Image (cartoon, rainbow, N blue to C red; front, side, top):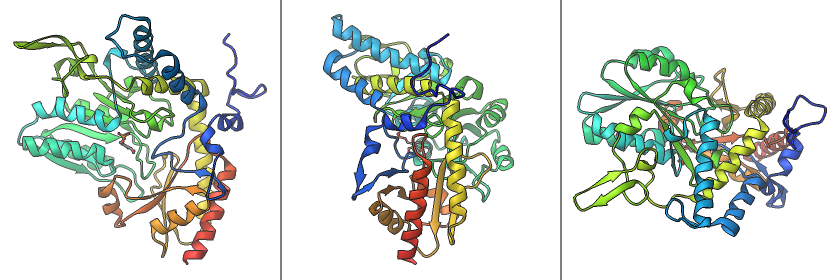
Length: 418
Ligand code: PLP
């Protein structure tokens, strides 16, 4: 029998003691404008537990060296920690480590697919299918590929509640479509897309699938193997890890067939002026010195989330979202964007007569951090006909009391602007 996790309640169902969990996030203790911080900008970036901060600190204090190049003890330790992080992340996503390319985040991961998979393959007459709710990181790389190959980018529309229109999506999967790129969870609407079913349909038609897991991996258990996609991208800083870390999972057959996107050290077996023999995947795609300390931190973040239990994280955030939704429906003139039945704890909203930047600025003065703007999703906001929204995005370490403070601040701000 394994020892109980330090966050477990002695008398509970194994669910973490959320007050103790929160106490492990040093930044959440601080004040902003003389008020206790309410950090509701987790979809933008997440806060870090002490365990992650200490792992990065310990790496630089005791183990710092470059990976793969040194035979000395520190080099071996650094390499083991870096490769250990890959192994932990692979287990976390239920994939093979040799199919997981470590990189700076989802933006890099999606560009890697664009430049190494799509660019050499697509041609005029082909189409890339994306959904209306994609982040720019899952739109712009495809537009760049389209501009260079003559392929087109096709859009699968959503329904007004912010769900994917699955009939329209299916209808758009015509023989010209070679690649489908879709987000697992929308960073604006919170919509959780049925990626397993979508990938099954696409696969049946021979369409290669790319899933953007940036907003999913921090909030629910991800089983990439069960999703059945061809590529799955994640970013570390939204899942308790350091910035500049992330990964692309790809089927081995793709990694073997894809040319490298960036060349340099680490990604080769042999170099001469007659030519270069590339390393095996995933190292073939990891040229140059990586963010070693960052991946040590991401490894610690994965350990941390594993110990909490992603089922507990998901249940906790669902409970917080239900509370937030209930409170927000009582605020007159508040419009929520994204009310799909399967939703993560992300709420985009506007208040009648108030500009979203004014709302966010006044909320900040109350100690509440929310994001205001277009959330790197211009086409989605164009669909709703608005220039910007405010977005409150929660994480497991947020509290019911913070929701109440946020709602009280919102009422006050609405009074000031009204
Ligand atoms: N995709 C989605 C859905 C996101 O929310 C984000 C970040 O906000 C990204 C991609 C880009 O992630 P990164 O900037 O970490 O590469």
